[in-house]
Length: 297
Image 1: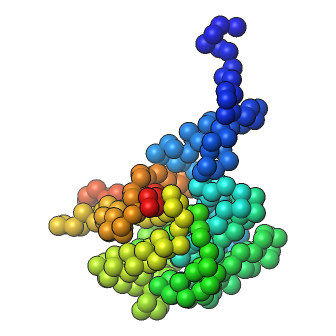
Image 2: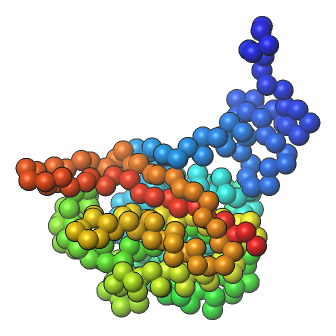
Image 3: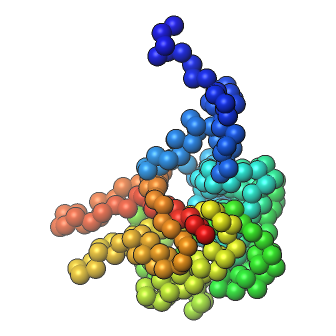
């Protein structure tokens, strides 16, 4: 065997885990090997979870939410940014994708979710019951009140994951994949409550989001990560509507919170539609941005 073909040796800090690769005992972030780590750092993340796949557990209950995330996607995020026993906070828990992801990740990880709408909490609990999945802590409240709950205020979290309502995006008529999934083109706002970020004008949305994530920041451990999902609006004349860039700018105003990069999530389960045909180009948005921040204080 040539030198080039020789298997890599574990070295002073390495532990050979066979097919998984070599684990470095200096790894303070997660329990991944170098081979597993490098895969997650790919800036484009392509998945294709079908509605009936185990990775999309309980979708038939969770799809009452306008934007349910696959629990398997959250599981991978949680496994990268936490170790066993890690604690995760989701201020916009919805139908519990993050909480389900923490349960699927195992290792004694715990998650706390805050959700405004009771029907979404009920859907999450039904999934746990029907699929025999460990139920995590789900608090019903406006996310701006999260520090009023000892489950949040008395805990130091390793990771914050947020999929905030995108201003009034869901209050618009459904098209494309949302219309296909729900068999209806009617608008599907997250809730009908004025305090819901999904019912706010854009500038009010940014202000509320910065306030909520600032409160989450106070419960995040030093060097802990904050992961935020977002999707851009379609551009309009005079308004590029780059929501992801605006969120990076807004959260950059939180002292000590530093933007570290993004992953672009390409969901292959999304269908393409001839938007704009035959008159003008209209983009099929089949990706979302996963924005990654770290607490540097």
